Every structure is written in structure tokens, then in C-alpha cells.
Length: 77
Image (cartoon, rainbow, N blue to C red; front, top):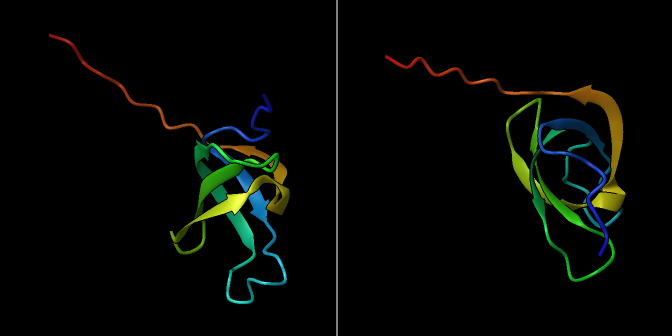
């Protein structure tokens, strides 16, 4: 079984294909890793510019070396 290359919270560069003329290229954050019926795994990503989410194939992404971590704290009484 193939494993996802990008982690949840990681910033990636999205490059739309020629059949997606209206898709915005640029930096996105991985929100969810999705299964795929092909070898090209899928992700739900969110635009860092406008917050728009889309589902894309792994072959449309490249890493940027940036990763965002959301840290939540809990205070217990």
C-alpha cells in the first residue's frame, strides 16, 4: 500500500493541470489525506490566500519545507 507523501498541516505548492484553467496555483495547507483508487493519492487542501478548499492528486503538489502546527492547550482544574 502506498503512503501519503505530505502530512496534515504541511504547506504545499499546488500546480493545477491543463484541464483546470480556473484553479488557483499557489500555496495551500493539507487539511486531510484521502484514499484513492489509483496510485496517485489524494488530499483535501485549503488555499493560504483565500481559504478555498479543493481535492487534488498528489502529483499536483510539491513540498515547500513549511509546516503549520496547531497547538491547543487545555487547562484542568
